[in-house]
Length: 499
Image (cartoon, one colour):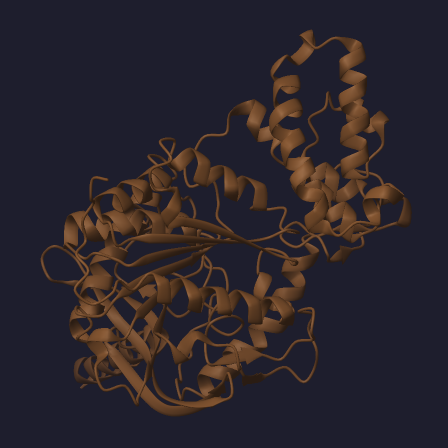
């Protein structure tokens, strides 16, 4: 009797823990679909939104993870073969695909003020600037971001080796995209990748991986606030290239001399960029052998363009770390400025120090995005789960070796004459600054043979330039224009022609 009772207790315990594990991790291959409509550019757009998980399989066909995604598809389209598909990633690494989803390109955006700051009540509203009028969009969350998870049985070491690294990330995501495109019958559609921040090396590497391993050729890659893409700066360029960003941040906070402050920002920046390339870079190259008189002259010019004092510039041997700049620019007023968007202000425990205590902009963004996305999935997209939505998930350590993604993108462009690239940057972004985004393009294509297929756009905001309402409209219009011009005329062959 006791043996039988023990068996029953064990069976109930086993069933209970299995159900609990399933509830915690949800089905790896399940979706829910809802209908929606939104007014974009004055016209009603009807769509369906599919939310859920699509599996990642290993080489033996075993499910090893489920990637959470949301797929918006316009429903009044007769021929999806001509309908562009935009595959969207955010960065981190370890960041969910939330930022561009509910603040940039999707049919709904979070409730914030005109400049991007949180307001209550938290929530969601229609996005009249969404690109859903011209393209379908899928927002993808890599493993451990959003609701995406590996199987419970996988240990941390195996997860790391399989998912958490530059090359690992690109490999499994390319396979996932192949499966998604096949499942949704989108092989004939023009295809675009868009990535923000760490999402930029992700989509750059994917462009070549999709071509060479899956024979999937893209029409465009959009890099929003790009990282270095594995393109080495070296000590000199790494120090000099920050100056144009310093000028932009100082101009916003009215810390420049009166003659510069009276000009518009975009009037000043070309002058500072030219100085950075023609004078500052050679000066820093000379290091301690730079003549003292020349060193003082350079320090005076940096001070003029950065809003900092000549004294602190000389104390840093003309090389101002960004962390120090964020702390120093408004130190006398008792504020630091944001890293990813230097329009934001923070308050530290002490005015002294060489770096801010926290990222003022990121805390503000998490303040507005986190309640909005959790509310949106449950109440608008009808997706219910007990899993925590990871705005930032555990993906450390991240294997950054063999990052050749910028050069991979160039190679993909060379192999595919249809492939174009758009770069979008905010002038006040100190994490992935706008001038280094330009530098990427120059170094990616030293021959200059591909430069007519690459373009850069700047905006008067930061890392997530679309949080500012004026830039939300402009940046989405730039995406529309890029998508349209990246669609070849019917019958136009993908080939190079000798002139």
